[in-house]
Image 1: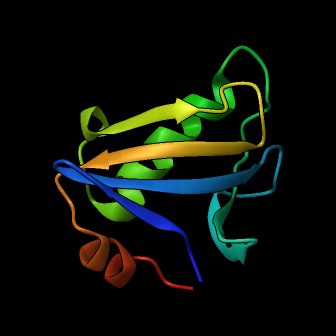
Image 2: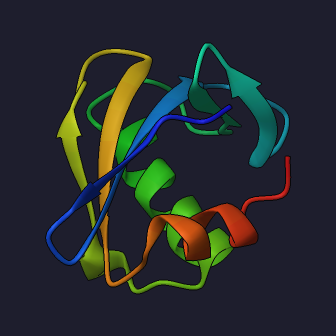
Image 3: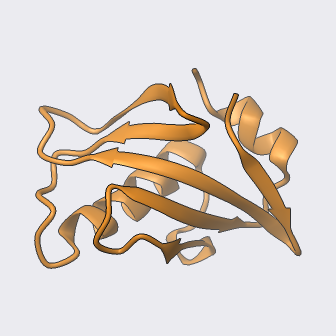
Length: 95
C-alpha cells in the first residue's frame, strides 16, 4: 500500500525512481513508495525534472503544483502535489 500523507492543499508521496530506463512508466509499489522508471539519466537534475514532467502528465496536474521536497540526489524521493486529495491521487494511479 502506498504511503500518502495529507498536507494543507495537497498530498505528499514517496517515490522510488529508476533512471535510464527504456521508457517512462509507473511500475507499481515498492516498500510503500510509488516506483517510477524514467529514461533520463541521474545527472545534473535531469531525472528530477523528468520525474516532475512525467507525474504532471500522468496525473494531469500542472508542473507548478508538483514539488520535490526531499531526495534530490537519491533514488528515494518525497514529492508534494498540490490541489489533489489522497483519494483523487489513488484513483489516478494505476497499480
